[in-house]
Image (cartoon, rainbow, N blue to C red; front, side, top):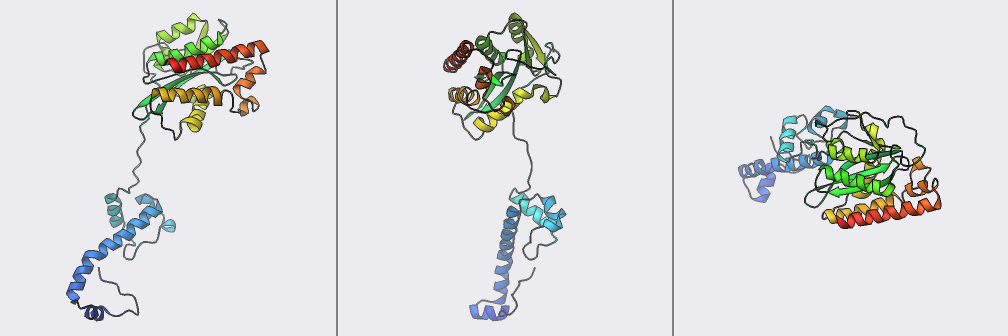
Length: 303
């Protein structure tokens, strides 16, 4: 490596003489400082490029202009990227599992596939997701009426035991009181839905269970769609302090926003609440709204 003097500038000997330093002293200082300055420029180029090391060298047409002396030196670029942790290492963020289908409980076939719904309380869909609290994870179980997309039962806890899903189911049953033999309940194959406790409640109310096929999330698309909406419009970017704080805010989103304000293209741009009212009598509407609000308020307060 040699010192570079721009064309037309005084020579190194002349500059050393004017500065009152020896030529050997100048070169000694230059060898110590020039590489650091050069690598500072290299770090700036790498950070602005936003590329991984292979992309920096395998795409000549998109390669950024390197500082003088670094063109064609991939090992040096790789070393600098490693020192600054700029290797673009991709690690998957930790995502807690909410579905554990590796259990010995009985699986049931998918009865919801191809159903043509004509009203409420014909098909309910259930699912579980997670959300971040300040210091831990919480888990949300929901039950929706597939016809109107309305959330009719939900529960939020700090655990994934069967009681989480059971509480959401009990809330839905209390709100709707389905006619025995007229309703199918669809879920994934998770242990919370396959266990005896959950199955006994379904059978005790004349509700027929249904489960998605292995590895096929589309079988429970309506529940998955709600979870996506919840994460995009409520959970994303928010920090819940603790479980009570999360319950209050989730309850507000479900009852005030999702069920009663958010328009759904699949419902002719009506809210789930409005869509159900188009099919019910005035007395049924009043009963449904009162029951839903009271159950949600009592549930979120008691937890």
